[in-house]
Length: 101
Image 1 (cartoon, rainbow, N blue to C red):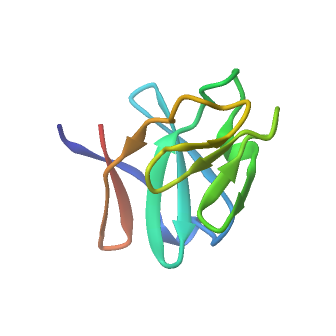
Image 2: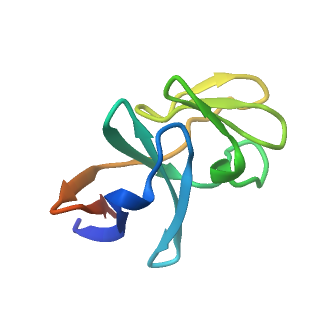
């Protein structure tokens, strides 16, 4: 596994998801309490981009059916989402957000 460039840290805003694609993987980035987290950008319930959802208190709410996921663990927190979303390891190096694929 190698870390790949995902975004510049300056591009991320607290409580606002950020969408990026790395080698055809759709990734959502989140800046929560000064830490960067990354999940797959597609909801596990039905196809919807989590980056279009609502981020609050470290949880992302899917814009389609309001399923919620913990961005730190990927855990599904409420129906209709029941399967966790994939999470990725993140490193920040000299202002660059790097995601492990």
